[in-house]
Amino acid sequence: MARKAQAPRLYVLAGVNGAGKSSIGGAMIRASGADYFNPDEAAQKLIAADPGLDQVKANAAAWHEGRRLLERAIAERKDFAFETTLGGSTMPRLLTDAAAQGFEVHVWYVGLASPDLHIARVRNRVQAGGHDIPESSIRRRWRHSRLNLVQLLPHLTELRVYDNSADADPKAGHAPKPALVLHLDHGDIVGPPDLSSTPEWAKPIVAAALKLG
Image (tube, rainbow, N blue to C red; front, side, top):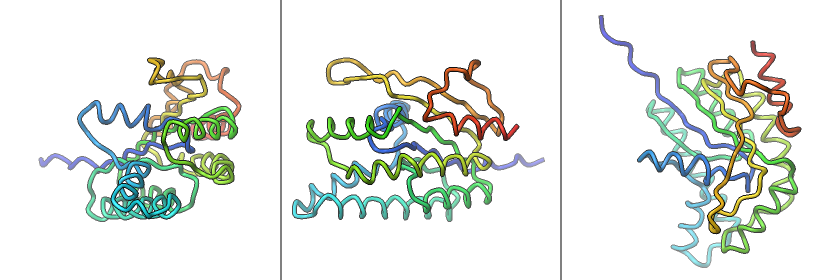
């Protein structure tokens, strides 16, 4: 009997700007020898190639490139890893469509206690030479990103949610210490063993996960 072909997989590093997606999930992916599409890095490469390009246009171009690569991976049924805020409607729709087509969808979602903390982290990044994100965009994404994640739950193969609110300074040798808030595997909650300490920002996600069982 022929072995069943393994389903293609999508690996998604999700969370609002400043959450620490790249520092946590991205670093783990690259440490394993793999790679992923990081729109922030793509935008910076565009600006480096064309210094006259402003940040807003570079961000938009990088987003469109990420969407194109995801659509191509789905069409060609290939594995793909990428980073997204999940703050809009396009990426959640594409992930839902991919799941319906037999893809495994694995999401690592990183969040912070409040939109103000996201804003502060982005400001710190800007002071260190990174790129800025408008405060209004961060506040909007903080609301919509979690709502979109809740809608995605029934379609996910696996979900890991991390709280990264604890202060960290990688340059000073203080690595991020994300706390696992929720581990969902094929609709079943498999961790952590105690959900009573779920941070406020993640409670709607955990509540939705509990309803899947």
